[in-house]
Length: 195
Image (cartoon, rainbow, N blue to C red; front, side, top):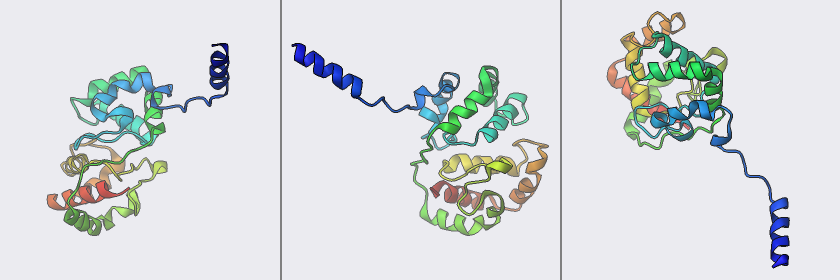
């Protein structure tokens, strides 16, 4: 009996500590309510909710501030963004930025992806050839996001219903107005397919 206890003690003392996970991040307690819609650790499995895991912290902070102020209109997001700001927007944004992004598993039509690949040439200037964006310019990573979410956001940009009056978005909104809605769906499928 004493032998078994000693072996157990030696094993416990020499065992490697468990790897830190999403629940161990200091911002988790401030961000956990987001998982109801955006999935565990920000990895949404919904067709219409964005994946927050791995999102650039500065981009996310601006989005939350815009939702909270009403600049980016969303009756669903406004109260949660106000809560995130009150709890500590830097901690919330930092939590999601530190999580490992798991691209959407939702299937997209291969024909739409092929059409979207051709149409995406006009998007490469800002979002890059792999759709990864440019964190230094606060341009988001579109790769692996759900196609339904991407399409809805492009339609909001096209109608100037997302962040009206946001000067840095003016050129993109003008571009969106020139793209047929069916092509926006193809672009969404293409960016969703990228890894």
